[in-house]
Image (cartoon, rainbow, N blue to C red):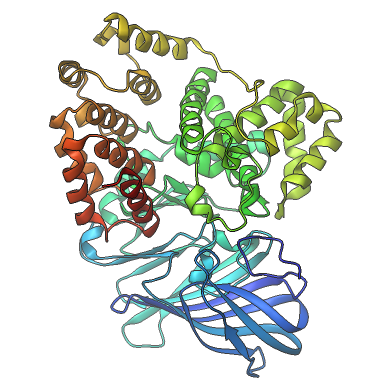
Length: 593
């Protein structure tokens, strides 16, 4: 056996997928995505080939020449899904499998028309990270396996299909009233980066290699909000080297999308909560763009190595923001990240193995232990390396790192070996293995200072001495400064102070969700009932877990608001994404409500 990924049945000694061809049909009435997947192995193989599936119906399996392949679908495991075991004749290099994914797929979100901006057509989208591609089609669902792919997706007339791939053409489908969209992905990717969306979708070009896709009702707002992304791509290339994915397009998702963004190559998925109307939340795009080098080009081999993707990408994101906005701006983001990291340590406990960078996850669902640790502790580790050797030398190392491992997936040990070779003695100097393999945060973690950061901290610290902010104190503040100020205030404040803050600064009416949610959490913890109507509006129009979690936690922390929280969740339970719904159910369970 050569099962190297605790979240996959794939045994790479049996054969390795090199290319995939998908032919899929979308049935909104049945909420079913069905069709055929053709796997092309890098080399002919015989005997057993194990594939990953979850909640899939398998109706046939054959070689590329049409010879039937015996198969067995195992009993489902809560984390891994069901193993699909094929008995390959010798030799076999191409395998076709007929399959269907239903509404039970953990990768697919089927939206009713009322859950879209237009309210007319239903909508379908996928979210395959970390290990959900197996619930769309059988595959070796591990980042260790990278493949190119092509796809044909047939949908009813009136719908548009987009994929994280190069679009081909559109032609009438084989059935009346349908049409077929084609796509190719020429660069090898891991399975979790396959992505599609189907609905009422329009597009607008922002630059010669950047296009925005969205529902028509929000397209113009999105195009304005992200107008500077083309320049951002150029800035990133100046730091990390050539952009190797040809295009950087974006899709603004319906509200139920559970994340801020997903770095699907060629088509980043973005939450609509970024449409603040003032371009104040474009830093999320900087993060997803940075993944084009750190994460998509060089990828973690397993979810135990997830920090390689996210720690390097947060560092890269803040380098982009520093180049665009200056070091003070990057320091504000680092301070916000440190707060999130401390909250994650509090959630798990400082001695928890889930506060390590290299995380032991055998028998653990990675969705259930998802946190800011790989992002923010990873960022601090990379920053420590940069500060230890100096920016000029570190930038050269990063370029060699990307060139050395481009289009491959690596383990933490392979990364450390590379760094030991590039920077002899440095890992020992900074106690790198303490960072990677031990829980908590080492004492040599980098500290960030800036004048803007210290001004916010001083104003927040003055609250307990009776100092309340005036218009002059916050003049020119960016959203990040408001976030930090609200986070640094006491956990709850008086009802009079809530009323005063809201009256002076209109926090409840803010269109920036980072400011708004931090304010709502503070107000709810303080028992300030006038924010409940606005809170209901957020909880019923936003599916992003980053906002849902703290709002429900705050509501459940106040006995007088628990019934309100239960009523809203009961209304929204079936409208949230599966990942969001499960996370919120866990919050209710922990609260005993």
